[in-house]
Length: 181
Image (cartoon, rainbow, N blue to C red; front, side, top):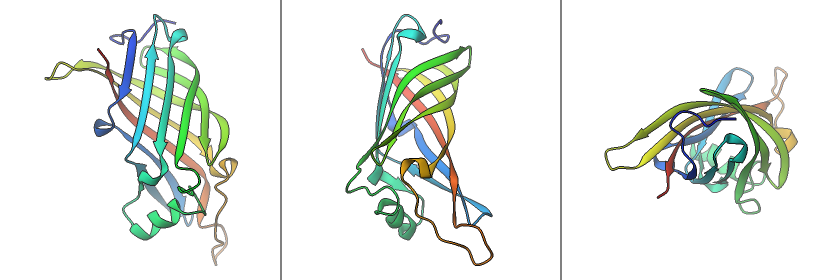
């Protein structure tokens, strides 16, 4: 499987200042709430083909923010991420398929010490050299998971029926990787 146009062999590291890792979950059955993580690392090792590539990412759970301090405290606590006991989430790629701009990246996602396989739909958005001489590659990725499968089971019943927080969570990643010299 050939490499996307402009992506060259080597080590590529996540530039978190130009990236975003977040998720969306339905709240009270009527609205979507978004959260994001501000501290993450990732290393992609690109070989001569995509079959030779590897990717490992780590997200610090304490870096979660949603714009609401009370919600952030609850989500960081034992009902959800339990950042004291589980300070990191990880993703390790196990394979990639596709060509051109669209790919499917398979891998193992670990949240709260529970590892499950996931498939991310990935769009390769290109390679560019910035004004400072760094070579950057861009990717957009998303997938949907069941939070219950990762031990995120807290919920509250609504008076009118249903639950406060949906089981389905959409993970969204906008990643800029920088090639290392």
